[in-house]
Length: 303
Image (cartoon, rainbow, N blue to C red):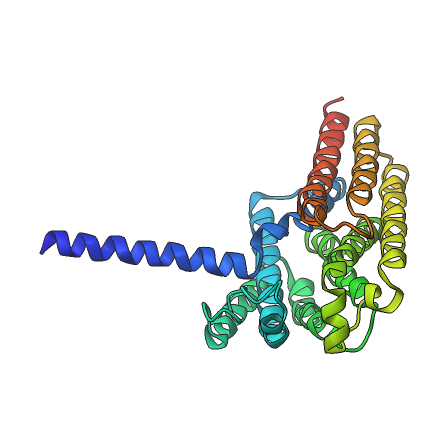
């Protein structure tokens, strides 16, 4: 009896763990690393105006996780029919039958409520903005049905993170934080264009819109590199406007080299290294930014 109970308990734990992994893979939770360092960088810079508690940071993290999970879950539901037709995405949880749309809708509802609750705990202004922000995030899933600037819209929706963090922690808006938002927007849009090159033929067949479909691969790669050049420019403007020091400037130089490496990896006739460019290099860029801001501010305060 005891052995049977222990075996059932072990099976239940295993099923829960598998379920968590399944949902995590569905929303690509690891990709949170792209935007989260920008939000945390905004928090570090906001310390110049207001003291920040650990509770503030916890609710910022909860809000980021809630928004990310809700938006990605919604996207998987909205795109499930296209994902089922596309060989690259047919193994995703919903088209593969590993998750039902009903369970995924509950998933989206739970994390939407987490985002709204966390926003409320950060102040009334954040609460009022939480639902409009969710609507903006959800709307991205429909943009590729009617416009090739869907990549820019994706960058814009994600770029709300640092500005939202600033508002949450200072209860005010200050234009310099937009430099973080603009750098994030162009950074996200640029590498989303690179990734969209993988689906160009499929998108053409299904009547979907993207920059690769509209302009072709070569021009799309050029536009992506131009967006990353603009992103680098905003990273540098942060150095000037926020009066950062040498440590941050060094991180900007590293980011510039990473951008160059990313575009050297992706060639018009060779997409074999696009996953390396998309995830590994881009996640490093975000982390380098956060380390640069955190180290620069820490040294400045210590000196």
